[in-house]
Image (cartoon, rainbow, N blue to C red; front, side, top):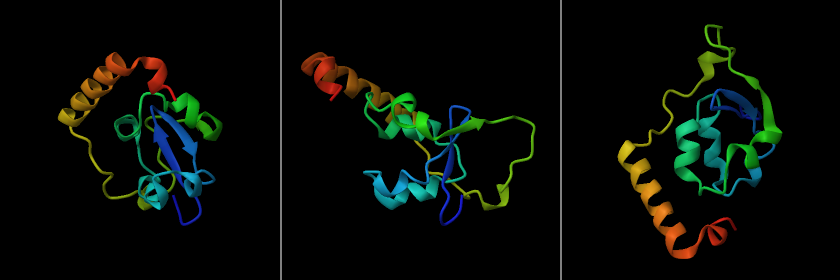
Length: 109
């Protein structure tokens, strides 16, 4: 990740989201995730309709190869914000209740 490149890892795959960052509803703070694994954070911060397939697939670069040196590892962020297990459990509960009350078709919008 650099001032003009923002590559992330999600579920073992690498994505170059540089072109998407300016249009991301979350704004410029997306840059802090560059160079890191956002797998848990991605699911924690998006509704169920926002999936890796629906939003990241077009930015796919390749798969992470374990045991290989990481290019640019010295530029990786010191810490990506953590998401607690309690938050993830609460989020699952809330989305399940919303689906029951509103119906899954309304949540898909």
